[in-house]
Image (cartoon, rainbow, N blue to C red; front, side, top):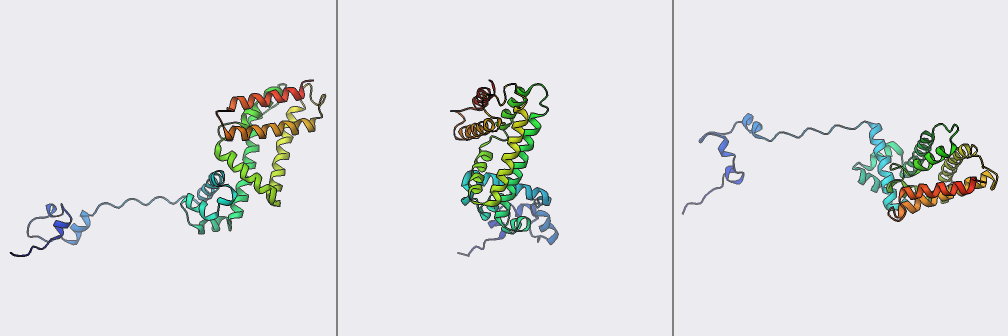
Length: 235
């Protein structure tokens, strides 16, 4: 029995159907038969890639905490090389620090914009403040989880502690501007103490909402903040 040799057509079915018997495929024809190349993905601008790293850092901190959110893990989640992180931030600590600064600035700006003009309706302004704090954007699991990680860093790192203190001062100043317009402000409890209590209640309910949205839904958190404010500022 004569031995049979397998041709390329036998290994790759369908190739023979594209050429006539007895002819050899030219180089041009071979190129024409190749599947079209996928277009290269457009390279993102540097500012976009930088912002992507900051956003991924928030997510990593929420899930893994400050110890688990290493530079390599952040890069792995972002799908970029570790060299890109070094290019933009030099080291992971700088990325964490800048992410915290950005979160603080964005949150306080969000609160100020949502409160708007206090005018003659300070209770409505205070309600807008609470609603802004529990908005979908700022009371998400990623944001609150990352915030809790940053609180841990602020306890042991002076640079993070300075950012935390600056944010708290701005937030309390905003609350004070609203509270001073309330009719009973400062009568039962000094304003400074009242704001400290209200701020602590807000932080506590933020964590409670993070732990169980079903147990303490957003509307209940806002209502409890408003009840606390009325107990403090209604003489």
